[in-house]
Image (spheres, rainbow, N blue to C red):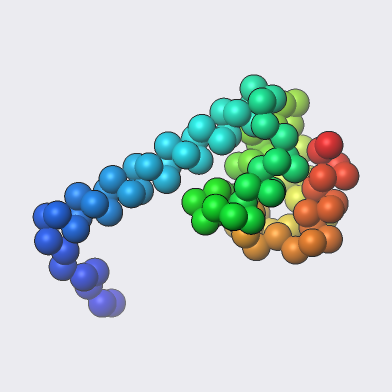
Length: 104
């Protein structure tokens, strides 16, 4: 198995800061969904233009919606035909339409 590349301390620090920023953005989005200040359709539009948002897993997004728990999110994804590992960037137009129809 190949070893990861050797980074200078400055490169390592920059990578850690970038990862922390991405986690903060994803956490903020999930909390906004939970509070109802952002809708699923707004999130899908934002995911088209922002790579950090596009990397959020669909399951995490659905579980963050008000009134949707782990079981409902998984069942809905299974019914639509979305894998649990799918990210927002990997959703097709029909899958997006089905999600919006289910949770709007």
